[in-house]
Image (tube, rainbow, N blue to C red):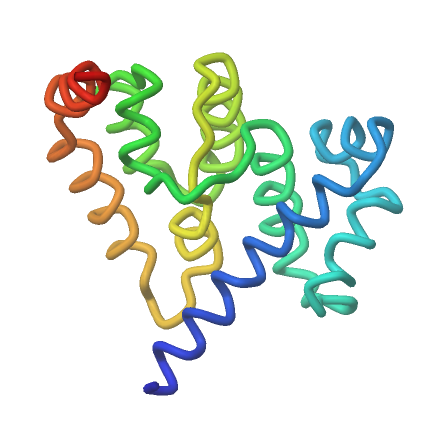
Length: 166
């Protein structure tokens, strides 16, 4: 396995690890994480994935990522597909994809809440990669989310579901 692929897999496992740790927490700790508080459960989550001492510039990114996962949940559903399934509008997607570093946390919180209200979990790995922008991959992640959203056909997916009982 190439070093880049291994690094990506390791990071994906970390994001998955956040969700697994979250599920084991008590209701009070989960509520603190949904509020985005950098309290004891937040630091336990980071410690669980081996990020005991994150760079100070990364702390707000970890806070928003953990908060969004806590609000909306985590699954293997690609992020753009989850947005489409949740009825996320094209106008909101455009704002999300064009957001700068200042706007992005607020828009991600709103997005997580919309996913939650639609009972639609998502794979937050793409958002993690967008937030941390290692090796300049933020733009690539924006394109991936857009492609997933615009190429996913909710009608053909629901028809497959409807025909599964036959």
